[in-house]
Image 1 (cartoon, rainbow, N blue to C red):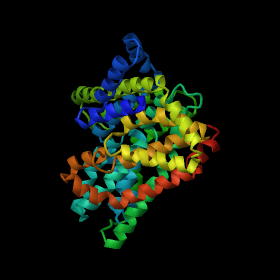
Image 2: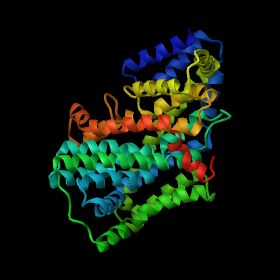
Image 3: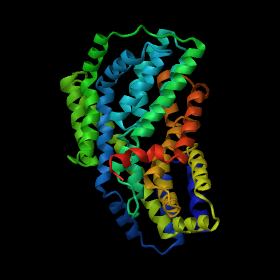
Image 4: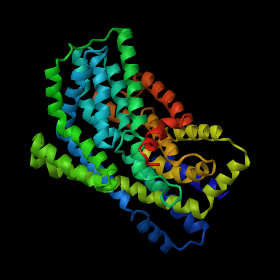
Length: 432
């Protein structure tokens, strides 16, 4: 009964158009104030201790690093490198777009940042080359979603924060290394879809780059690509934690953008800092209210009761994972990834653990669902970002993305029911 009241109130508040973070906070406060004897002092204490986690500091640092890279010419150099490598194949610039998104995802941690950085340069180039606008928009919108699957990933950090406290919770390091193979696999499948459609419709291809041109493009993009080594190498060699790696990434991105590539004058740094602070504050506010919501769920025994009910139904792992996918894809219709992870993970995680599902596999499954949600209406974040770049309507973009969206759904099925895709690499390296 209490669960119905809580979720009903949350749904009503969200349907009024109220931001998710405020809806969460109001739901918690209203329920605690009118339906329980929990002192409001406990709420204030939970608000403070809920975000007093070292791991959360990684989020603003990764956002800052992504903003420096987006404005600092790194994306343009990565595009040139990708084009020199695959531009001569069918749909060359489209394939370069997928590859550039994968490379930029490995340094930014954010899908919208990847769409903006790569799309704003790549889309005009594709249209000028003779590609239909729909084709380019479909590629960039869906490939941009790689930003949250290829590590480092802000949404992976949020998953770890949301499940902290559970004895089987995955670490940020485990999640990052587990995202490598699925991320590269999805990039390959999106590239395959691009190549097939380009070949089918006879889209243009570029002249093959010489070895010298490729070497020059690699040399130009070297400092941007080195960030992947700095972050991932630093974490897995034990030199620093994921949070310290995020801080290092921010400092490194600043040095590369301002002093090495010199694409960003010092006068623009305050604006980048302000934009990053604004985005970080928004995410931290969502996290704060989601922590409160999680506290309410736990105090009302909702995750535990749900776990008991599912186990009583003799729902097998296969059926449970199917239900989780449907639930997360449905949530993606009206919520953005951060909110979904922070609300759903604490509820679904204990059930998954009782069914014997690996916490890392479950985390990657959630991330892939978030990727799909970012690319379909009505609230697909990447659709809105791409709409701003392409000047196309959401309906038109929805039609444009369907071949790649279908590929992502097939990949979601593979990740869901073949855990080895996620777990093989971390086990090989001894991280699990």
